[in-house]
Amino acid sequence: MEISVLDKMARADSPLHLWDGRVKTVIFLGGIILSTAFQHWYFIAIVWMSSILLFSKLHLPWRNLWVRLYIPFGVAWLVFVSLLFTNGSHTLMVLNIGKLAFPVYIEGMQLGFLMLLRIMTAVTLGSLLSFSTPMIEILETLRLCKVPSIIIDLAAMMYRYVFILEETARSMRRAQLSRMGDQMSWLRQARDVGKVAGHVLIKSLDRSTRIYKAMLSRGYSETSTGAEFFTNSIPSADWKNGLLLASLLILLLSLDILT
Image (cartoon, rainbow, N blue to C red; front, side, top):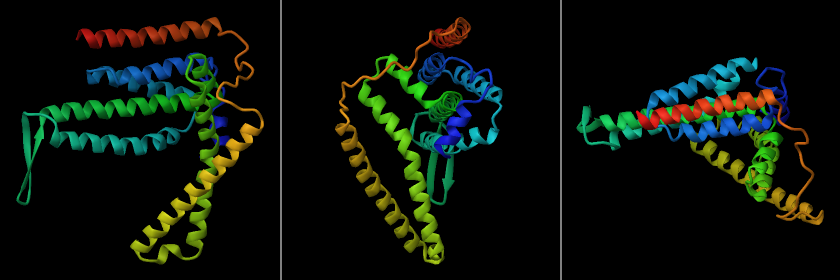
């Protein structure tokens, strides 16, 4: 996915897109943090279902969300399966594979399911934020929240150039395939993929060095400050929506603690 595509999606005209970026960034990042703090799965499920419902209001293809969730779901599933067999003391059942016996623990199933929901909720909220808010607004909101400037600058550069690295890797892969690279043995293909990855890393290191030197030549330093990005105040309607969502998140957290 190119940066222009993401920028186009983040500048659509749905109601959620029209919210002030500062409000959305604080609310969604707060939701990600709180989703990792909930101890009961049904409160996390409420936040997840609410985020999916909000995505339906973006008027974007559902495929955009499914693609974002595909890899995290695989990671979450691996975490879930690993916890089934390694965490707990009360055995739910025993899986016999040949001469090996693998006990499935109740505590592992509960914790694994909780971790799975946390991962999926965090990724969905992050995707919702990136689809509805330009990256520059997210980063400048973090700057207003007193996140160190060096972190903001690094994040901005990573966001800007990761797409170039992706395109470079894709071009090298196409060149490899055009030379019948997919007809070789699996071991040779794995070695060639490693070579492509190595060349991409070398190019990225060289490019990052040249960019940093160019920034220094233009007077950049860690204490450099630019003009304020946000020049207008947050609309009252966005304040109300933000306070409402924040209150709901705090209410869920309170109920989770008291339950």
